[in-house]
Image (cartoon, rainbow, N blue to C red; front, side, top):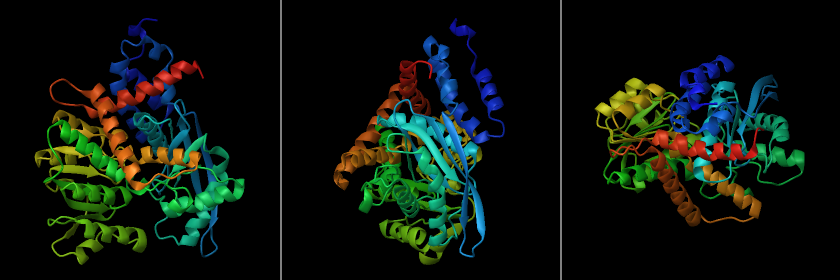
Length: 450
């Protein structure tokens, strides 16, 4: 079959839309990758004939299940849980579990699809998966969260394992939830094994895991800036979110001599012109993890800070790190960042910028690190946690920090290899998509039609 006989991008995407009705997030994710991959595949007949991209865009399996639990008032509650196992060509499925009312099959399919390429970029043997439930842990007691997690794991345990599928945490799933789920897995199976990552250090967790995603996003930003002969020191940054990723990104920006101006949550954002230093970051961590409060309380605590509804992208700054959730930075907000002189964007969250926003960054030739590259530090350290669990060893913070720094540098190099446009501009989206795809695609070719 001649290459010219193969479907083009528009025909391919029409097929994706037809097969996945009512799933805009998943279709968006596939389109974002496909538009770069089609150009790369143009003269590679073997990828077309083996239908590689079509196969990657069709999850290996999707497990959907009912989760019944009882609240503190003895009311029976019913949620829906999922695990999307997208692709295991290069290793066991690996990806987080998300507990949030916005969780749908479409959202999890998009995350699992993205995770496949992100994991590939790390160079570690990990496939792509994602899971979750439309359960909201906010406002629930510890006992309610425990009962939900135990019920969720009572079904999920059948589909995961250290050499099959290794989930981690994500939005709404932190150390507390991982602990409850791991305890239930151990209780049911009578086995202690590295079936979850993001565990507490007392029971097999990695010392660097809490910091990894936020730190990694800043390391990637640092690599982009170094490539341009710049440094983080002396630059201002706007950050969205106030959870684990956002606070650790703020921490690393501060350590490198930058000044963080904003943090946010679903209620709005705080703007602190004096800078959110380490003492203030520690206060936010306590607010969010212990008190489970709202970011608006920051403005009451620290003089000079103000709270605003909406998102922080209209605040003037040199750097931007979206670390909250998907599609939180739209076209108009991207234009505001560019017009305000923003020099670089590094995504701590998964697909936080809409396709229209990404185009704005691309047209402006802004340094833009997409999530699959910039926030891969989290899953990279999760992969290292898997290795430590398998070997029954524990590496110290210093060694893991060095490994994370090296991993993010390696990811940056892969992106520049395939994304360098030859005019001083690196298209990191294109570079990440092609580098991530190539490894998975070549493994799939080796297996034949399976």
